[in-house]
Structures are given as C-alpha cells and as structure tokens.
Length: 411
Image (cartoon, rainbow, N blue to C red):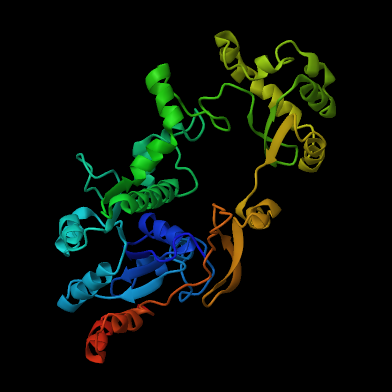
C-alpha cells in the first residue's frame, strides 16, 4: 500500500509549479485527476530547445510534472463544464492549482465557494510571488522569481552580469513547498475533519531555499556577491577547478596529509608545506577574519595544481583518498542519466514514453520503508478519463458527448 492511497486530488494547473506537486502526490499513491482545458495543458506539446522528437510526443516538462494522473478535458467556462468540475471536487480531498487567484475566482473556483461547498477540502494554490502584496497578481515564469529572490544576483562571476541558474528551481521549489503544505494540511485535517487554504509561491520557495545566504546579509551585515565557481558565503578553497583536459571537479581537503599528497601528485610538493596553505584552518578559514580575506588569493594556486593532471589521473587520486580529499567530478545530464548512484536509489528510472519508447527519466527523491511510493509509469492522453469519470458521477452519454466535443487537441 502506498502512503496516499485513498486520497483524491483534483488538479487545475499548467506548466510546472502546480503539476509537479500533483505528480509527487500521485507517485505517493494519490488519485490525481488533472483537469485540462480544450486543447490540453500547453506543456503536453512544449518540445523545448533542441528536442529531436516528433511533434506528437509528450513534452519533456509534461513527462516530469504530469505522469501518473487521470486526465479530464473540459471547458470550465460552460455550464456543464463547471458542474462537472464541481462534482469532481465533491469527491476530492484536495483541490490544487497554480492559476492566478483572480482567474480561479472568475471561473467559480474561489476558496470561499469551494470551502463552503466542501468544508473538508484542502484548497492548495501556488503563484509567482505570494498571496499578498503588490505583486500577488503578477504574471511570472521561473526566471522572474529567480531574479526577484536574489539567487540570480549571486550566480556567475564577479566580472560578468548576473546569471539565471540552469534549472527551473523556482517552479520546482514552489511545487515542493505546495506538496509539503498539502501533506501538512491533510495531517491537520485528521484532528478535526476540517480543510484549509494552503498558499505558496516560487518566490517564497526560493527565499526559503536561500535562508542561510539571506540571513547572512541581514544578521551578518555582509553583502554577498557573485563568486563564480565558489559559494559566495563560504571563504574556503573548496569549489570548482578544471583539469588539464578541461573537466571540472569540486574539491576540498579535510586534513593536512591529504593536502600534501595532493600537491605531491600534482608535481608541486613544496606547496604542500607552503605556510599559506599548510593547515586546514588556512584553507577553510571560517573564524579568522584575516585568513578569510586572504583565501580568495590562494584559489589560483589550487587551480594551477589541478591543471597539472588529466581528469582520469585526478579521479584515480580522489578514489584512493575518499574520506579526507573530498571530490566530485561535475557531470553533464548525459552522465547523470547513467550514474549508478542515481539509478540504484531510484532517482533516475526507466519509463515508457508515449510515441517515444523507453527512456531514463527522473524518479522519486523520497524513499519510504513501509508505504513506498513509485515513479508512476503512466501518461494519460488528453481527456482519456473524461467519459470514465463522468459515468462514475452519473452522467449520461449525451452529457459525455457534449463535454467531449470541446476537447480539440492540436494534433
């Protein structure tokens, strides 16, 4: 049995932030019903840059965010469409959406209306910048939340403009916060039977994920700036360095013996006893302000040493010193898909992708010993379950045909 078996979620959402929360709940056993507009969630058809699959293959964002759900395609602006969604929500534990609140209110999906209709309902929404304040109704996509949260401002090198991190961490972080809020509200409902409103945002999730760095500014009084291959708040030599053949490693040293052996392996044994770097306190100066100011000037020495050997050489060295010489080669996504560590933990799994065959994709980040979830290997066609669910709710064939006539997929 999976942890959320018996929980039904009606999801009215698009893109990633809402759907990815629904996908996690589905992987944990919930029955997630994705309500899609005529033509479907645009993410079904979004191929993205460089995608070589034909147009009819499910979009790669959709694969990660909308697997394991049943699909109902309905025009909610019609009388029968709104009635159908209402009746689905009557059977649900959770209503989940990342539509902007004014849009939800206009189509009859306001919190006030649905909570009065279903007092036990968890009404969970996510938007770009939070439920209150001047930006509460702003349109957004991930890059805008990254920009406002400050993370783009500390990403990149000091000489260059700010950079957007290479993943949609705002949308995905918002999805994680939304799923976390839903699960918390379900636990609270066990006590008194009452539902409640759950609200989060990409912006809020990104601030939460940067708690240390933002607190460092506020409490520590130090403005963090872009530091390239190093964390802007960590004054150590630990960071990214390239080898002779251009492969990057993240490296650091826990003890002095490992540092000396590193220098010897690079052919520069004298640097192992150089008084600027010969103790861990000097390489990782967390307390001494004078050493903290000096450490950035010492990083080029480490970079020079790494350039003396190839990636294969350094991998051998770090494999021989797994505990005290910490290292991790920087992988590209092709390598991540083949990484034994990801595969054995179920972080990468194989799924049958409609019209594309069997491929490795991202799995689940959480393992549970008694009620484990599964990375669901199911992708519903647009509106695949409309008739099935309408029959469960007592609709006749004429009503089903009326709703189905609005499906209008683009292919």
